[in-house]
Length: 116
Image (cartoon, rainbow, N blue to C red; front, side, top):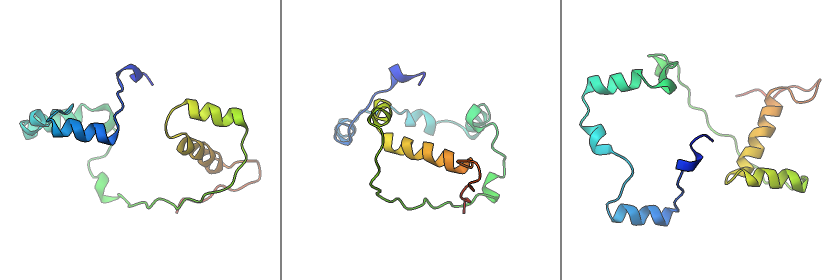
């Protein structure tokens, strides 16, 4: 991650304490004072928003997450350790890797699961 040095992690308790003291890293006061034209300009210049069509909401669909199961699964210790070293959320990353494998057809001759 290119900004890893700038990332700070807080527990929920620490965030509540900051909020109680009136501390915040956001600048909502500045955002609230922007004009509609300034907001439109900011959105238009945002590279993450550049490919989003103006009418995106007309074809948007609600996608419900699939249920999770708790399997008993034996994995190599070094594989688990590698994912754990990547930081919190390692089980979610393992799931993402497995999902990518399934969605790209997995082994030859297997069918990817349809996204419904």
